[in-house]
Length: 444
Ligand SMILES: Cc1cc2nc3c(=O)[nH]c(=O)nc-3n(C[C@H](O)[C@H](O)[C@H](O)COP(=O)(O)OP(=O)(O)OC[C@H]3O[C@@H](n4cnc5c(N)ncnc54)[C@H](O)[C@@H]3O)c2cc1C
Image (tube, rainbow, N blue to C red):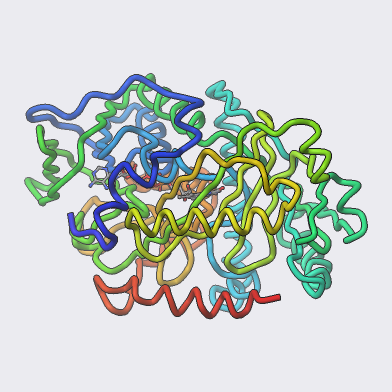
């Protein structure tokens, strides 16, 4: 596996403090053993791969999924649980400029459809994932951003067909959103928060019930064309499949398959979770809302008070993954948490963890065929916003592999082949410059 971060990024250390692992578990899926065959092979057991496997199995297809860890080992079992609009790292205006108004609107519809898909899936499969929050609230981190939020309300209404709500700076405290760090807000009534691991494990269970064979602890180490299909090697078994679906996102390798080399860029995101807060502590800060929120920075923070009274606080991670960089990143997250929620300065944050999200060169998600590979498809690059979009893309991936018309309109911008980043395997070197540029734009 040719991966671009330090080996620590792909080991247990970044996930060691993951709070979700205390809230849900499932019996481990057995590793692939010996020689096996399937019509469809899915590589990766996160939202993308599991949604694809579920859809394939429900269509009556013969499908085997290979996951290097256990289902939910990657970002799907580590994220903040914000099921919301998003998936691209471009503004709506930018998408319209680059892809035309029609296709951009198809993308806005897909964002909304992706959130609906998760809600429908939770209901249909009776997955209890501790949902809360009515839509998502964006908070101005500088007084001047309040004006930008007011302008944004109009375009949100137009693009997503909903009525957003503006919250004036002086009204934040009444809404249980008191903090010296925020200067007004905009609530977009689309989306909700969930426990991502409960959701992932629910998808895994449903895919298996529908007939998909799920294998954990089965890292694919080689993919070679064979007899009109593919041969996938794992340490203890080999899978021969006619069609291949790659769903490895931030944990991808440049050689699995080589068609991905240099065409995706993993980036770290980190989360802190507090111990349960008392009523007095919640009152002291004045933060009692169950809304999921994020701030108006490019390098944003995302946070929510969860139903169990713990507070989740997330932000971008560091540029390297070593034991020292993880400790340093935890310190940075803690400093930002204390600055935004000063009354909780004394509150312990026993949980800290990190995971990899994935960018594409075009800064838009991808779901489509892999160039130069017959019957091989991939979906990835949700730019840190994959709870909803990965589920949409996973379903689309299955439809593409089945050769059937997708059930929802698909934006063309998601199907353009992944473009290569400059610097090849050294492409991570782009990030310090990008972070510095965005940090400069975000300054107070
Ligand atoms: C800390 C953090 C916070 C986030 N917060 C949010 C949020 O609040 N809202 C939101 O919308 N998004 C969020 N995201 C992003 C979101 O989690 C991802 O976009 C989404 O989970 C991607 O799903 P996936 O299935 O494509 O990838 P993953 O869940 O990463 O799954 C990929 C899987 O592929 C497996 N794999 C890789 N290589 C191989 C191989 N060779 N053989 C077998 N298996 C392999 C990995 O083990 C991994 O389990 C967050 C991400 C992180 C890390």
